Length: 193
Image (cartoon, rainbow, N blue to C red; front, top):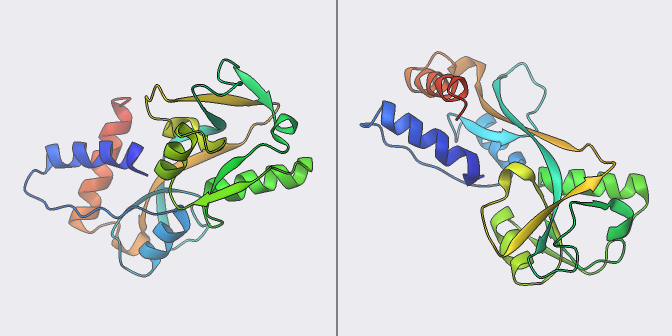
């Protein structure tokens, strides 16, 4: 998603201003598919496949939160129980989304059924729909933009986290541009950015 990758690209372009960068956004599954198929040199995504073909560097961990409109009755809450979400109108991500797979797993495990669901294909669309009052949604805390139209609420008793990584193919790890990007990422991480 753009919340993290744009910061990394900015650092990369400051270090290497002459290089052209092309960015494609999508869910984590699509990003890893693009890497495996050679359509991407590097990915910034979650849910890294456990395969020796990939080299990954952890960027950050982020907890799953509920996002509501600023005028939603829960907007002043710090936490909400998963069971409280039963029957709530909900804006969800597409099934292949890492976020949605995690949400679906939690709901099945706790036997919670949401109300009417509007399915959208990006976190940005989910945030816009939630801000418009179309329902509650789920995002990871690190993805929450500074937007006065929405509020994030922790899930009480739930420790669902996402790990975002930079990944490349092991075979391309020594490629000069891939290596330069990984070095930029290392510097970015060391600076605490």
